[in-house]
Image 1 (spheres, rainbow, N blue to C red):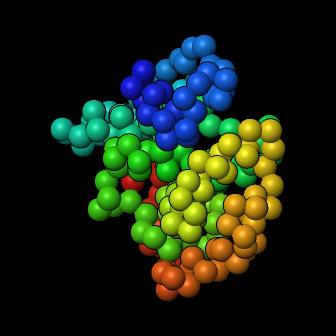
Image 2: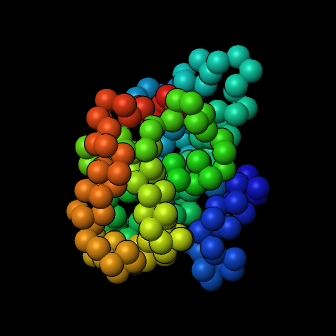
Length: 189
């Protein structure tokens, strides 16, 4: 997990312990539950044994790594003291997973997919990539701003445009790709 931690700190540009969330231990539990591949609560990562048993042969390690990059991001990212939209935090976790290269680009969400920017997972991750194309380091800066609170105005502060305008321009760039072309979070490995 040390490799994952360091990768996340590098992506978030948090070289020093004073820059990052204080987490002394991370627990990983594999147990029987349904409804999700994994979830994180504080410093506890829970992975479904029921899902693991159905990993395609030969892809188990790759998928497990993908899950760990996504879930470990939840441990270390900022949530604006609970004010950040859930979909945004899921999108940032997928952003780190995509940067790690532990995802399947052939089945992952296409740019322009989704009906709302804060749907989460791949839809939000692709939107964050677009925002990064407008301002290098946008997602990192947004995460840093979310240390104490979240506000939609951060998009204007960082990009010089209101969030709704950025979303409209993003959708226009990709020809309003229908939401049905978005993949479910459990199928993007």
